[in-house]
Length: 464
Image 1 (cartoon, rainbow, N blue to C red):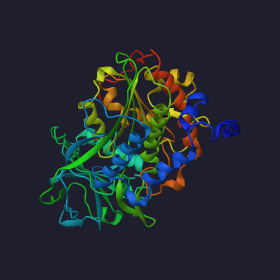
Image 2 (image 1 turned 180 degrees about the vertical axis):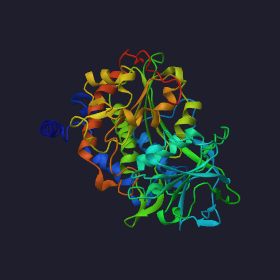
Image 3 (image 1 turned 60 degrees about the horizontal axis):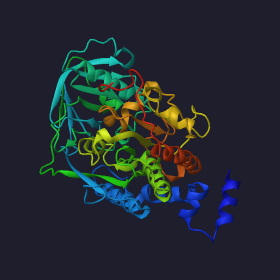
Image 4 (image 1 turned 90 degrees about the horizontal axis):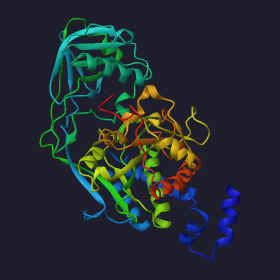
């Protein structure tokens, strides 16, 4: 295939413009274009593109400038290519304490504070082994110290299980495999972040990772208190979505929405001396897919349907950019034919056929099978237990009825939320091939009358 492409380019080199070649021979996504986006987005100078930071705004501005260069327009009714939203969140001073039975533990020295509602939390301490959580009798408002947690997934599952049981404080005893849990959650304590025009969310339990020697000082039945202090004068921050618009020829045929998120975790806890969480795969790779599909479709002939390209901000902070877009979409949601999100397409998943991306919620609608029939390298998600369909930006729109799915590469890569998610760990040829496989199927979708539909029982009705 590469030889054929090379021959095509040689035959036309010097005699026709790139746009004409694209229209007559089929668009070719170049790996150097893919790598160029990643070289900028995942560079150390971008400091990990932290949610609602200046680096995120720079990233959104870069994406918007690329949209402009490809010939995309502002959506009618917008005055620019960026959609800004104000967010608020309490900021802590980093000096929390855990007190129990006359013992006081210090943040950073004895424990990491992973999540806090921004105020004191306390409860009577109960010791539970991780394997006994499902059967444990946990009083609402209790503090639970969990032992035997061996990896990050088990830690998050334990927290989720105890949250559902009504625990006020969840303390995990640190073990090999959980040391960088704070880094994987963004490097700083998570607090109730929200859009400024949303009500405050329900507070989640305080979540503490306790060093093993410190945990040994906590006694069953004592009252545990976690005290935090807010930083003064916390100011609202802004997050940004980058939006480009390719207008179709038939205003009544609807709009295709192609999306990714452009933020990552920023600078966090060092791992092997590296504190920058570059997010080359998560989700500079998805952002690159949106950019190169915009590049391809804008260079081709006019399409029947309009195509909206959106790269969201603050996904890592709780899908805030996509939530804001869903509430303030410049295109009525009823006019959205479908949404295809791109997330972490930077590596081949070992459970998928060679070269194939997984599509979350494959069985929920006819979108995936139809795109596959038109040449897209897509297949069913082999990780149903991970609930990836509900964990990406597609879900906010799916809850509002839009047939929305996420295309992804390796669902559980070892670089996930690590500083090692950098350019050196990307498979650029795989990315390029995956994006290439979607150009003509998406072009067909935007030029057809086919409208994806949920299968019976496939449309989500709430958080699952």
